[in-house]
Length: 325
Ligand SMILES: O=c1[nH]c(=O)c2[nH]c(=O)[nH]c2[nH]1
View (cartoon, protein in one colour):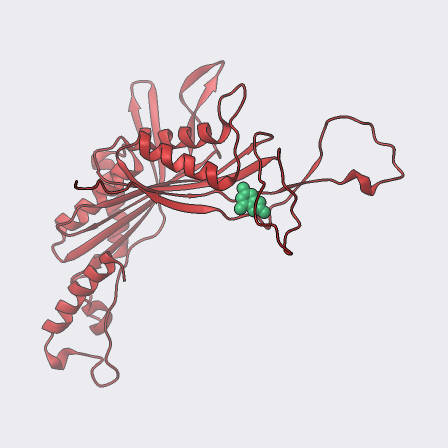
């Protein structure tokens, strides 16, 4: 059981323990223990528009809320008197967006958690998960448009804030669905050579992946928008290397590690990073299988793109605690 679950069980057990015997609905049937409860509204859709003169800013979000209460009488006794309806949670999202604006998904999630904990004393935990639609300002004639936007499918930005009463919030952000490819400067060789191996050593191969990266902050004093763009740039720079010559990768594993290391080096506000780099395979077509065709000899290559199976390579890497010496 993780720390946060343990905390919740304590809250719930404290309440169960304080209930008088004759109110324990389940007593005559079976003894039960609540491990966890949570309820909220999923995917509340919201478009926030801010006008700064002629220049407009948009944030389109899907917000999911979840609350845990200091009692379980709604579950055990059908007593709804402490329930903050999921409908009211949805309304809260719209009210807070209008009152405070949406500066970033993370800031808005922090604001909502704080609000739920401050307003309702019987809420012991609040969690807000947000997915952001990737609107980008249009560029027309090389100039940024003041009020026209294009939905970019480059990468998805999601985040989650979870906060227990009297504790600091835990905040993570993720970037996902970013498909990248390089056509050289990737190799894979010298791996286990036994009776199961058919894959030859590759000195020069094509490397394609769909990046998923999730990172945990150690503070809320962060420019979240800039941090997300910062992680994205690091991922691209490590993957691609310098524009004129690239960077050699001996394996997906090594590229993944170098990326995580750079994120932790460049961003002191990040404590831990998870990266998943599926190895999306492109198999070369074997033209020796067409002996009757006289092929033009050239250096061009033809591949068969495959979506499944893909290699699954991931790691979670954290900052090492400083030794006290
Ligand atoms: O970079 C790679 N890592 C692997 O673990 C692996 N396994 C495989 O078949 N191809 C690759 N490529």
